Length: 339
Image (cartoon, rainbow, N blue to C red; front, side, top):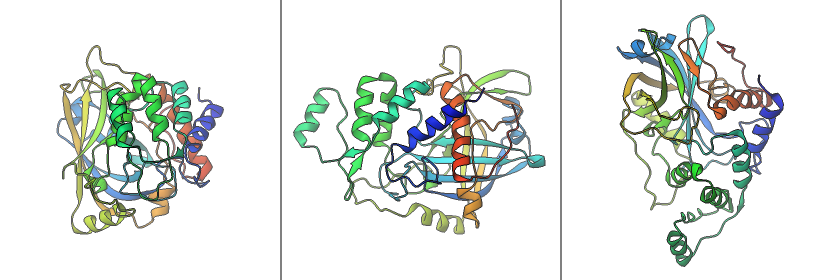
């Protein structure tokens, strides 16, 4: 059963990491842009999953790309996790969502760990570490802190690194987050849905899977040796889509016996089978950004027949937290398709 008090506490914990967060906006991934397009399933998709959007028809989609921070200040060129939330618009007003980010794994495996992590990620004053301090960190097998950007006064990096040094499960994601960089375009990054879902194929077989989006144009970051630009991602996307569509492949990785299904911090072996489930084609930036970018409310639990949630406790907690966030900022309600 959903716990509204837990959902509120989770959202409050996220907001606490951003002292300048503006009430009425998303707790994280605050700055974003809405895009329109369509999804076409591959020929083999239906064999692996009977969900409606994997049938042989073109499905309209709404996508919101975003920066990871909960701050209202836009720093497109800073090292940051990016988000890609996708809504598939189905028949009779139904919908299903896929929420993804540029990290391959999550930071923590349980709700309790999440609260501890957000406490560790509180903003603290930043200063450039000396070369000797960085060498000492490396000798102790610790990740040195990144140098602060021009004008950057506070960061949560020191706390998250300290947390990762004490908690092995957080080390992969914290390391990735610290070195992920900034994409040259929202559509030149790969995005991962992180959690395990259970899909049912046309043969009735249920399989554990993880989804990810791969850009057809390839992954490319900005030059880290150059001064970062604060604002370029949204304008780049507008200009790009005026000239030609952008495309992503939806990849589905299939788990096998022994793979962890309920812990989003644990990667699966790289040699697991991956299936191309379809192609996403983005055609234009939405004209009404309030409706398509700011008020639209995604939820990883908005699922349809053929896709079920796993027992991942973080995935279960996200359902209520996303709804609490929606209600706080007056986001548009969208009915869930399953109980």
